Image (cartoon, rainbow, N blue to C red; front, side):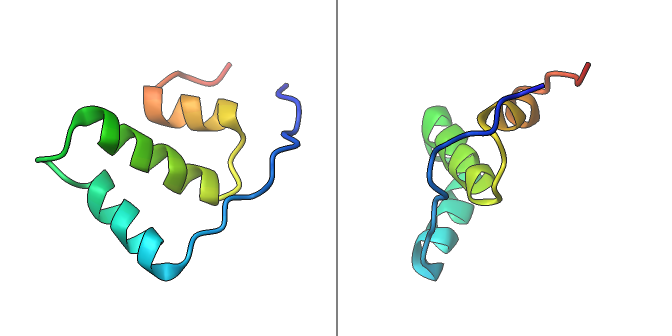
Length: 62
């Protein structure tokens, strides 16, 4: 089981959240930027880093 993170929650204002959502769904932006936007959006939903990895990399849960 993953150890709970001690990192602070990521808080975004509405403008930043909208910008990240647009970037995450972009087909023209660089792949790394799209992936980073998806990571940040997932992290704002209070997901643990290991859960983010599973979600974005398609790794099956044990």
